[in-house]
Amino acid sequence: MSFASDARGEMVREKTDQFCCARAELAAALLFGGGISYRGRGKYLLRVTSPDAFVVRHYFVLCKRFFGATGEISTLRTEQLHMTRYQLLLPQEDSAAILEACGLLDEGALFGLRAVPDDSAIAYACCRKAFLRGAFLLSGTVNNPERGYHLEFAAPSEELAEFVIKLLNYFEIFAKKACRKAKFVVYLKGGEQIADALTLMGAMNATMAMENVRVKKEVRNRINRQMNCDERNLARQIENAQAQIADIVLIEREIGLKNLPAPLQEMARVRAEYPDGSLSALGEFCDPPIGKSGVNSRLRRLREIAARLRAGEETDI
Image (cartoon, rainbow, N blue to C red; front, top):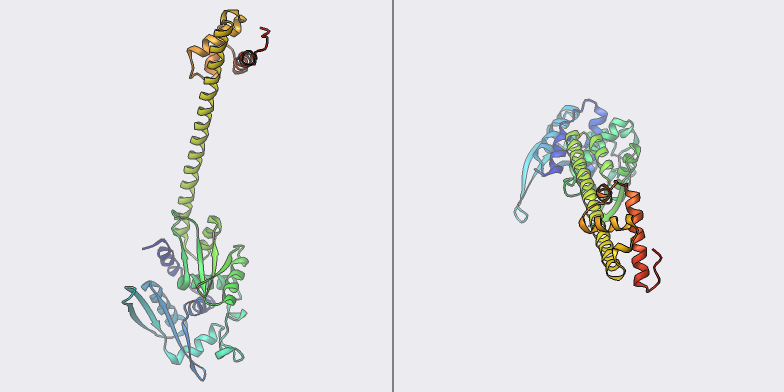
């Protein structure tokens, strides 16, 4: 199973005890799954279709428990795509009552159906969570966090997409929308926002798995940054050491190291003997030992002398 399917599996195990939540979740499933067909004269055919059998079984139980409607589950197979889908078909005689309970009937709307539920159907925070859960179960997907952070809902209309964004905003989760293949996609990109959305919809294990991946990525990135930093520092140290040795060779050839002050002679000798040594290590080899600032001061003095020699200037030692 995919990460998204595992998350949906968790969501259907979220216990629904309140009728208000059941109707909000079913309303989302019908709207996002394209599960409402107009049959004329106030008659409708309601169905829930999903590639996950557990999602269809979930709505079978929900409809029977809260609406007294016993549907029929069937298997649909698409030979061209070699896909199996599962469908719950609800009794037609119960359809109008279910739609009325879900806040989706409106005599003044096209075919008597609302594009989004009536406010009374999502009056409470628990109902809004349930609606989002139903929307995700029928149209949502989330990437495996190992490959990146992306969660989305595929809405059949812009009005429904805006409705989902409004509900997410209520919980301080801020999504964006885009039009893709005649559908409006509501999506989240940030890892923290996706984790909040999964938790909100009842997928705690998916959230924990995602957080584990986020921590691993952060540790891995931190280690990589440290290694890159260490490599750059080492390369810079080697480059500086090579330049310092080149200065010492030039001074020896042009004026001789013996003509330098004793501290500079000692520094030139120590650097030549320990070309890979750090400034701290070079200071330890001096007699008496000196600190990094002292080593740096002497090497800078040697560099100035070498620079004047290269420029053909007189050298004041």
